[in-house]
Length: 344
Picture (cartoon, helix red, strand yellow):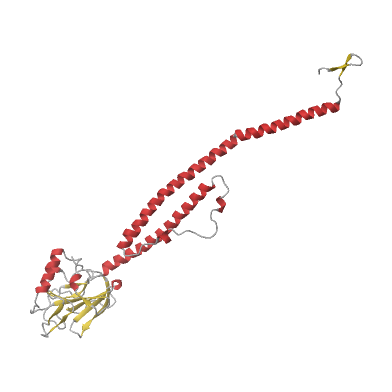
């Protein structure tokens, strides 16, 4: 029950009851309610600035975790950068030098991507700076990886080409070393039949008639004919990309057919005495940078001889004399060239 209020009436010298109208009550309670709303708003604003809600705390933790993960990613990317730099250095300073290729300029390895802002969609967030840095770093590494991948593709092609060149380059004796009886050197010398001094553009290897003659490098037979120039039955092999040709003369009979692909150590014919020849032997020539440009074959036996055997061969070539002897075709001479034979 509401308490009654009284006010002293000076005229009647008595206490009169205070009567509060409805309007006054509404105004009073309305003021109280409005004041409560204002106080509540003020309290909420102060509280929200000083304290996080559970949802806000969760979101703050998530943002902190994301930022930490991006920072760890940047650290990993820095480590990847160090590894990439080492790979690039090996590529330029080792592999490309070995394979005779020019180093890749840093302007190509570190080239950026121009045009529009690629990271515009990452702007405006709490962690935008770290997100953009990580994305830019990742893109840079991906570009370097792409350049390095292209480089390795090029080096693989170079290595395969080098392997082909190694197999194609003349590198063994045209007959087995154990079958060699005597050697005649490259250079000016008296001709054993014609009698006057002239250029001897190859090396002669005397051996028993019917001794196998081997291709000294991979290639293709481009001549297989009887030469009117004194070589008798002869074979010429084109060794392809290395720019070499080799000639094998005075064969017992016709060798492999033109167009035949041969491998190093494969039999291409047999020692004979055809053409301008005094005894069974193979006349062997090495032509470099085009057929007709003979060079000294003595430099092209490195794959077949030890150092000691090579120096013995050089000494024998310098001191040897032409051998003149009777000869005949051996009974066990094969009727056809055996392509599977290889130098042991």
